[in-house]
Image 1 (tube, rainbow, N blue to C red):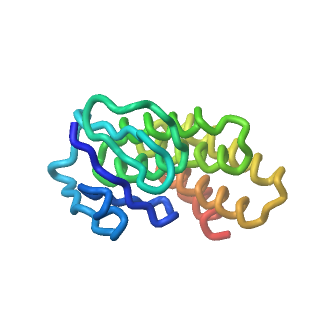
Image 2: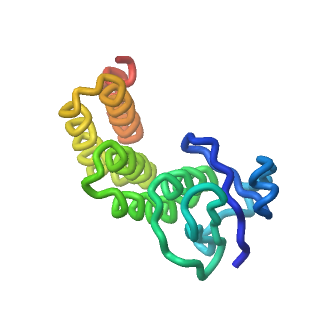
Image 3: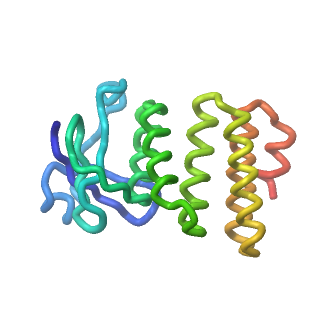
Length: 169
C-alpha cells in the first residue's frame, strides 16, 4: 500500500500528507470522497506520536494508538466507510480499556459509528454507559458532552423529542 503521514491538530480531525516533511509543514493532500470509498482501504498506525504514519492498503505493523484510531475513524466516516470506521473505533476501545477518560472518549466514538450503521439499540446502550461513567466522574463538561452525544444517537434513531431534550441542555 501507499504510506501517508498523519497531520493531527489535536482535535478529532486529521489530514494525510505524502511525506514526513509535508506533514511537519501541515501540507495535507485533498481526499476526494468519490474515490476514497469502499472497503479496499485500511489505515494502520505504525508509530504513535509526532510523525505518525498511516499505511493505506495491506501491511503495516499493528500498534493501536487510541487518539489516532479515533481520528482515523472520523476520517473514514467522512468518506462513507462506516464499517472501517467501526473497526478503528473498536481498536481504540481495545487499546484504552480501564483508562478512564481516554477510554470514555473511545467508547463515545464507537457509539456514534454504531448509530451511523443503524445499530441504534447497541449505540444507545453504549452512549448511556458513557453518560453514566461521565456522571460518576463528577465532570460537568464531560457529562454535557456525553449528553449531547447520546442525543445525537437518539436523533439518528428517530427519537426526536428525547434527542431534543438532551441536545438542548
